[in-house]
Image 1: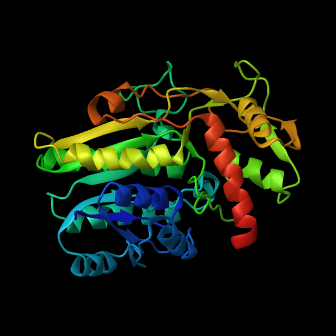
Image 2 (image 1 turned 135 degrees about the vertical axis):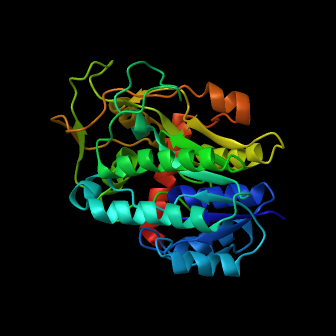
Length: 338
């Protein structure tokens, strides 16, 4: 059984990817420092899969901790690197925290891993900024980042590209996600935001359950069908499966080098469409208001995903309704269990 290290494997996307790796016959090894996740997720993974994945609580920004990991785990067949700080707002106020953690962890892993180990990097559609044309493809110009967090994604991609240029035998894929939402169909794992949610759907579900008094829609005067911003929302299970597809693609004998893929649905939905769909599929009425635009928000973005379909044989399958119904089931589960 091929062993895949999953850094940040108890986080939102990481935990779902662990499930999909196990389903595909891999042996995931979770590495997480628990700074933005919960050890409870390990038990939830056992409930879903019937097995408890190997787990190491380590800080990958320490080279000694990375060395310890590689002494403990031999014969690694791949690594999927999620571990990073990710709050955009916090990154603006504490940029050094983000640069130190997000760059050191990446560089330490690359420095100590063998060049033969396939590497999947968790990137973001934020690298495109406000795109010049839609749907945005991988060949689009990478815009100046709006935050230190976004800049860590851009620079990390440059680090990976430069490394592969120097060592062409390496196998590296960067996946540029759009907006992951939803939860596992068992409602045993999902997004577990610490503090005030940074993303739309957790704020919707927390408002629906009464944890938040009201949801604010930031602007209704954009050049869209209802005036609210448009995003490409993808179910986290589909996103998790994309990481398995990336590992499998790099196992092909003719793959070497560096490549980048958009991971989304290729469809855009407005904020108000998401709210209305959530109300319809869950038979609820949300308390929301229209507020002023928020600085830095992109008006419209959705992805061209033809490349991931053609080369990795991966496509998103789950619809917006499933994303929002599963999010609500997870929110209700969390209320009693977290």
